[in-house]
Length: 492
Image 1 (tube, rainbow, N blue to C red):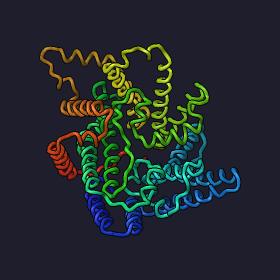
Image 2: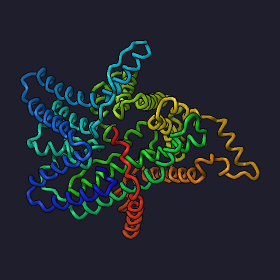
Image 3: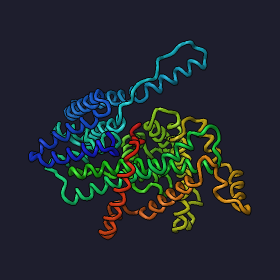
């Protein structure tokens, strides 16, 4: 059931009306839990069993951890949770990847043996709810959280439908306390919640799907080299698409939860205005980056055990972060690039160049932000390309200075227009739309770098705010008549 579908609209209205009609808070939570299971079952009903298994194991394990008589038994309970959750995640998400690689190795060394067929179905959202339940058990083990008293509250925390399949990854300490008091969306929460739904759907349906997806699919369906301009057009379009797609989902999730009276954390903070990669990861997919920091990077030693160990910890964290996104060597390379960028950033920070006063000026920050975005674009190539060969071909085209010079010369030749220097198959309009969308997105991110969506909208006069939301809603309505595209992060 997609947010960008009329089916979800009907489902959400029914859930909202019934939940507000139920007077008893326990009944309302029970109804939201049942609705969440129904929401998840709409994709593949049998996989609801995995949710139940994960929920029951972590609930009972976490109850027993504080009562354990020794540290060894406490650790044993923790390992039961880790083994069961990561075991299910590994099988369903990485089983096919492992079998495929074993078959390739067997073929390469001449063994006439196949280890199986990599045809395991990936349950939607398993990466998200696995990390969510694990964080609860680990926090209880560390003593940062006491085992919760209500199984109903805990089951709702694991299964809450607005953020179930693609985040944000919510911590138990953020959600469970909200279950102790009767909650209904107030007038202000309903107003802003529906506004967020409109903003999120506009970002997804109009920009990501309507404007950028056709360009991305056209460019990345090419065989061989695309050329400098075409490669950059497709990659910039994907940079806009993936942000607007995932930001759209997260915004819808926060808005839907708010209408029901619950607050979820923001998952994005204008990442394309980041100055450096530490800043980027404090703004992009915040719930995942903070999870990796707290439950992986810091336990590995963080930056407390010397420079070399810090670099190793960064590399391991980002490699596993890349692998979390998908069972593919492309995602491993994507994670390795981000790890390398973070290490390089730390190395440069120790040089005299980093101390130049110019970097503290507005121009200097703008240059650093632009360079960060430039490097991020190369990582998105590996996120989107269909294989390593295409990814390297695209990167090669994007760095081909000879094509840059050739293109610049073609623009100044008397009588030759810009459109004639663009490949006919893509058309000048696609280039123009991509440039406008990319530039507009970068301006918005930079302008709101120290703010958030709610603060920006509250500063607008109510007339402007109403007209802007009405225009967005109209564009969403006319754009949803076509194909309902799944959110990109549903595959992770």
